[in-house]
Length: 573
Image (cartoon, rainbow, N blue to C red):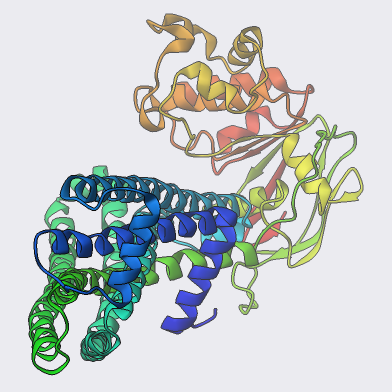
């Protein structure tokens, strides 16, 4: 994986940002320029205002004379009400431009964050199953949430920074028109401050990386505890989780305080440096260059307003640097997914109809490619169409790996899997998955209604189709007895249903797809005898109507079998 330097990372970030924003970014910059110019004109209006109240040259020259010429061209009287009204109008235009600019910046930053979020999720959804299993779920969760939020805030700050840069450029341009020497004094002073504060920029980037790593670890502890809440309580291990969480939470607090100290130091240095610069500026203007009062007051006002702008720009830049590690994490995870992306499915996928059967021909597979020990080693077997095949074997013998190979989630290291004589590869994989009904050991139910959970497998199905599938799975009676029937919300992961009810719903959902192959992977291993018998009876009723592969470690599964295969030690018997 590429090791980005800070500058390389920033260049890639800006390139992707502007490549996505396209002409919208340049339009936003145009609005920024218009706002900056409007503010500049408003500042220049201070000169005739000061003259009207008795401060200024008796014989205007240079920029002051030019302003007078432009004013005369407008035909407006040079009096206090006219100058004030024009000034109010210009400031109003500037405020409107700023509002428009803020809205555009917000839209651009949100659109860019959405683009990253959609890209990342799409890449994750298409990644190979083997690669996906190697990535911790909390890491994905952290990148998809906390890191993208950080990027959204940082991107908005970057656009605001660009906006401020244009305002500063306009200020400096006006100052140059008023007095080049004094402007040079101010620019040199600002440059010295930027050099002094460079170490703080490096620390901001380093703190951003520390924050990202600590937050990722915190997400890991949180997700582990949520997924294992029941067992943690049963083991009395809550305090251990609390200590781990609080330790990481304390580290985040310290890192946040250190970053706040960097921002506060920046403000302090600019406050002190700004006062020194303005004092020097005023001294040089009065004692050495003898700048006229009106010009000098406008320039003091200009540079007095520039000091907080420079301070804000520096702090925003530090915030951008602090954000870059989050962008790096998103890019790295996106690249990891893209590097292991499955072939895109064709636009139209037709399910397969299994006619003869599935053949495993000398199939071997290992999760660690450098390890010569195979999880499955030279498997030779045939799963005949419209028969029920029971796969038995001890835990850890390779049965679940066999299931993943059967539905095309994993690819053999050697050998072939043939569907009616055709290799399970390329477009055949997508058509085959469309033809499979899968019931895992832990059924996946969403916090939705029963009907919504069923339609997840077959969105176009009718309510009659749902009830038919429920009858096939011996689940229709208990669903009818629920207070709201199909409209019953099952809770997170189906928590409002019993284990047996969840598995029968999962079986019904798989049957709703009208699969050519029904695969049950330890689907009854966590059930009591009564619920297991209900599932077994449902499978008995399906015999001869479809191809069924039932993976189990229980001998009771043999009751519904046309054929029994034992997988033990990576070999089939």
